[in-house]
Image (cartoon, rainbow, N blue to C red):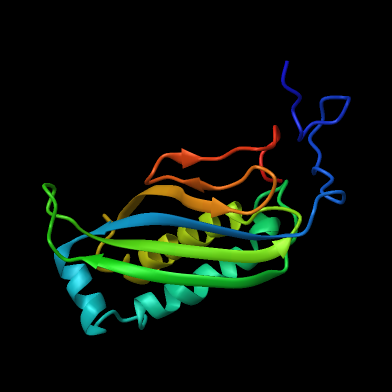
Length: 176
């Protein structure tokens, strides 16, 4: 029977002790996709959104979100992030529903005893929320989905790459 690492002997939630784990370089990349009307994407590209430069603000928000992850996700450890890199890929060609998209990618890095998957996932989520907030006055139908971990490396559990389906696990409790 598997042991649940985030529960104590009484069955109460706890933060896992990572004190005995080796310090290794940890890297995680996550993505989210934001769907919006073609006119909204065009206004973003032309800098015509009343609240300002949407992607610049979303980029800063994503970095701030990564840094605030342990304040938002109860069992996450505070980490010294060594890098958070955010990029955007715009898809101006409308899909079958007539929506364009912006894919947000975030890569978080640290050298420590626990992974940065949640920081990367939080970063892309906060960027998507920021894009919505910046554009909601002209497009309340903005939505986002496809938030996922694209890849990770470092730590006892090894590497993971969603595109290749490759996962090399070494530990039994993940990459805490």
